[in-house]
Image 1 (cartoon, rainbow, N blue to C red):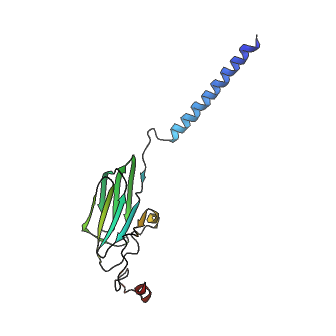
Image 2 (cartoon, helix red, strand yellow):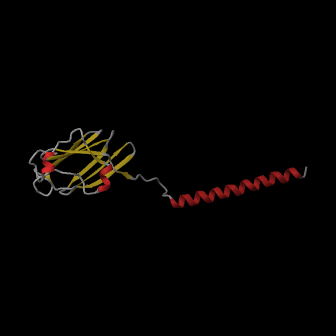
Image 3 (cartoon, rainbow, N blue to C red):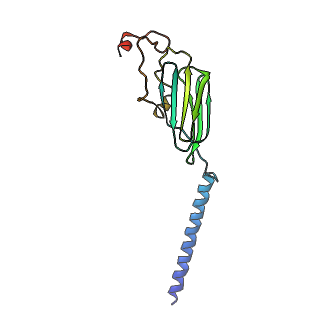
Length: 166
């Protein structure tokens, strides 16, 4: 009978040690992480296509709220909330736009940004100078307008024979 109480006593001590270790681990974790979970801004998936005088950028996310878009001469920024996520991104543009004629509109499921080109004869090869945005801001191939013959290539130069025949 003397053996039984010792076993119980050992179990109680072992459990107590394990409990202390768990508390230490939990304290270390809480010291590393912020006390309240913070929401990190995520880049919003977008598509873009161009017309002769305009570039259209679309973002389709259901239940959009708190949409804020700022259009500058060489960039635009996008911020919105949807489904507990916060979307935010700054897009540096490959060419200049006319800020006064550019606009945006949207509803609870999509936002469209209309950028007016400063040089209507220029065909944009890419939307942004930031190469990391290529996987996020993709060309809308359904609405893509093919460059017309005689249209100026980027930089104001005349298109080459190969570009004209394409």
